[in-house]
Image (tube, rainbow, N blue to C red; front, side, top):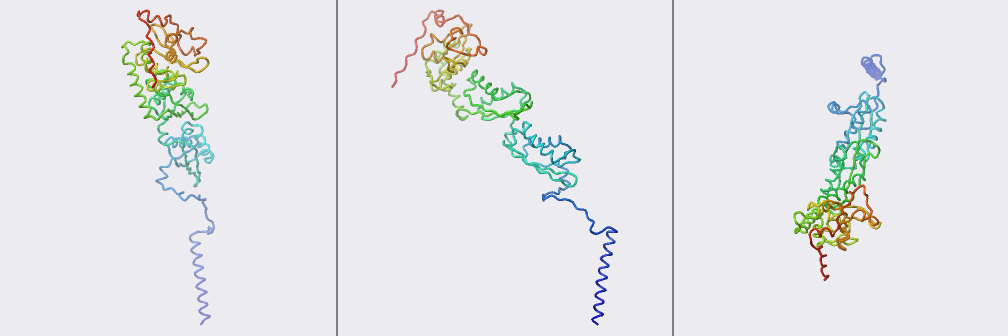
Length: 395
């Protein structure tokens, strides 16, 4: 009985094994069950892309397209982005490193905006998926605010407007302009000297140019450091114009340079180590040679008297004075000295009178060769020169 049962169990196990073999042979034909195809899988868990996502992914076929994709994403301020290759010509792994390096170092927006880039290149079957991560040294708002200018003139006009509006920062993109910190500072200084009504504060200026090589297209980043916050400077400008109007209240409608000097003489004192701004002279009432010359220029502008500020040297030291039109000729006028010792010897000087003590760039300023003297002004009017104002007693 037991032997018969054991025999039946063996027959059942044999039949089950035979059935399994038959099923395997029917499914695989003559192919071995161990002949399988393996695919290398990346460690990235998000490797699989749905067809809809794939259709929206940028595909690049060569290095130029890869570089342009990286550049366009940087211009858009993207912190991360992805694209894939298709029938790629070249080595995608090598080219993505080259593209990131070129965009960061050799393009204006990349050199200006990007701190560094990292990238990951993953092979999936016959194509590569490339992910790029960007760390920026400027905010998206600053990148978007980069202004394109068409040439040197437009650039310098924009820079002067920055200072008029007390802007602390600006960036400009341009092509074919040899712009640097010297050019920017020179334009602001020239405008400050020639139009103190508009520019009442001369900021410290620092510039960076991107990229810093010989590229034709560049971005220049400019930082302005003013003597006070914008709201204070706005109040100072209002005070300057108000006090200047009060100074000139009694001047005739056809005021001359001498009228302007007399108006200034009663309200401002010259001190050698005084302040250098118009605010010092017009509002605070005392300034050094630079502040005095700038204030006299502002007052002349308000009365339509032709006047320039001269930056030069006196006795070997940096010094400032003015050139003014009196009658039909131009004359040097050392207004700081006139305020200290009277206008008789320093208000109407020709070039020949200046040599030896004063030095200036004669190519930058017009010649002063008038024939009149200070006394001639009063001989024509048959009047005496005005006496200097009496000093107020000190309390």
